[in-house]
Image (cartoon, rainbow, N blue to C red; front, side, top):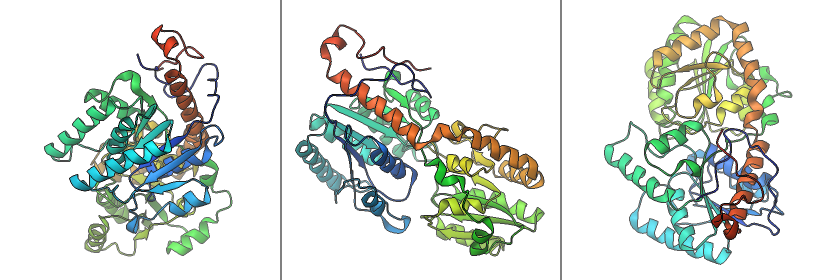
Length: 424
């Protein structure tokens, strides 16, 4: 019998007693680039009570054009270790070396909890943690590593790896409820293993009270009165920037004052640049590249758009909500957790370029309605705060550690410290 799941989405019941000693936590993630899973991991280490749960990060060395959070880790005083063999691409020999080195590292560190993230590090990290006899193993799914668009072989490989590795984890954290449903549908883990802890953001950082919208628009080359559709994300097949560009073209034809701003970089950038040239919208589409001033970028937008084909819970959506922006997004996995259709934005089917275009045009023609949607997003954004995420993570850690350290109570079916929580 495993400890039962945290309520979804609220943590309820009496506070869980803290372990009587510091609980050492190691987070393992493939890359600390600028991205949602990586920012989630950094905030989890930086904001948790470090006296009770001292937390460290182990990652691979890769950064590249997508930016690095290594300096952010140093500024936050989060100890970060680098494993040269831990890389994103699959390479059997190098992956075997990484597994051996991870196992030895965990053994030397005598960690109480190993918390893995995403696909590659999730597989190697969970196996290494069990080989090292780590007491508690937690895995966070920041979106499953497979989609319907990928080959049967690729999908089958990852589904079977996730099924196997689910049995090595004491808890599986999902950042969006759809990932729990998909995982169970595919036979990955048991219902009692899953815990919903939404990926949190620094809400105040995105409210934008001190940002001069006019100055930001001027820096981006946007006219003061333009209708601006903006998006922030990796230029990759997952985020489908070409779909968004296709949705913007009819908006640009109908609205001579319409502009599109894409913040981010990635492997699809050459294809996006070629499509912009072909559409003759070079002066209306702005590729802002990788930026660290995302709150300022969002202050220049009138609408936030996201055309992703698959996701966990995209952190840019709560960020857009905190900035008071109406949202038009595809119904990819965890997106409906943030966007309530007709309330704080509009949802369209994945790949529905024409539907996204229609919704963008509607918002451009109804500024007061767009403002109301933005305000509704602001009203519920605290649900996605980093503080709330870390509080829930703390409760989960405490329950798992106490459950592991009370075998007699567990065998007899007694409650450990408090009645176990149930899934709401």
